[in-house]
Image 1: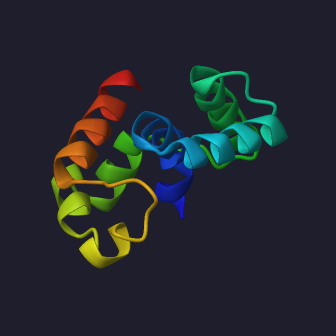
Image 2: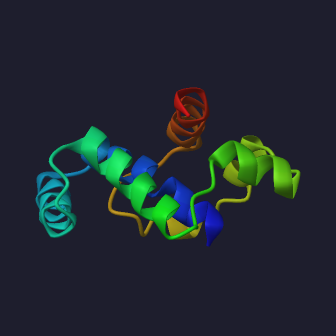
Image 3: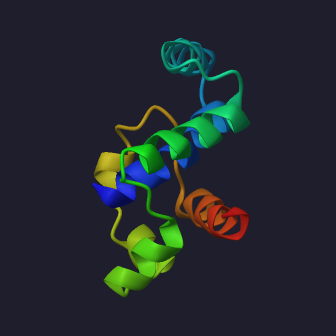
Length: 105
């Protein structure tokens, strides 16, 4: 759960960058519900909301505390479940986004 909460902004980004028009439309509706003005605003507000709830953990903290690497997370991703995601998520895309997320935090 901790990992999921800290990765939501990453999934917002992936859905907008690689998603279909229908998915982008859905994401826009979600943004309106949360009063997010843009993708960068969604990241800031999501992280602020988690921090206020005492739930904010950086991806780097999660990896260090659980003694795992991004590579392990990606390699343990179930390919069958990834097929159910509305956006094609290759291991290359996941690796790129996870690493960018670490650099930007």
